[in-house]
Image (cartoon, rainbow, N blue to C red):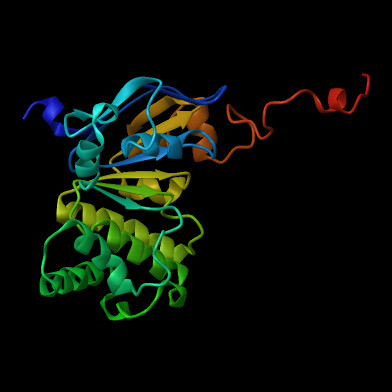
Length: 269
């Protein structure tokens, strides 16, 4: 296989703005098949906007996202719908249906997008729940789950239809250390066992660097650094160093861009 065939997803010179506010300013990145790639950056750097281009919810003002050899924004609705079936998503807030049981949450995409029998769906749902250690929680509703359990159910639903690409949007947010470590290890184990490709979008550095193969750092709408996870810990790049070591001073400013405080208060120097 050549290099192009080995890349499941390719982002080239991607630009996007919300009105006058530029969010993506020329993103370039590649997601190889079978790997776990982390996209890291501070809040508001454009990570979620980038994900919305992966799924075709947004159209770029310039550049492209290519998934499985197809440019996403060039597809018609039917083609886009079919392509999305090859993607699984673990949402930032889990996104489970609160009035459905755990079992029905996992069965829903199978019933919606396949012609499988209920007997087969039952076996597959139990298989996915067993993979995340929650087979006996199938009759519970999301409100009866702990935060960590809810994330594991969301992870099981993300792999319910055996997608080629699994996207994790802030999978570690709000979790206690034990649940966080459990979810991180599940992501790594399931990726290897299922032979899928995973994208982890997060600002949690410590856990993501333990499980990913490659890292992209985004700042001001562009990739400012990239490399294997092990390389990032000792990077000399100012942004990476600030992010890795949680330094208050560096390329990422605490204050949103604004006029000097004294000037806004009408004070003279």
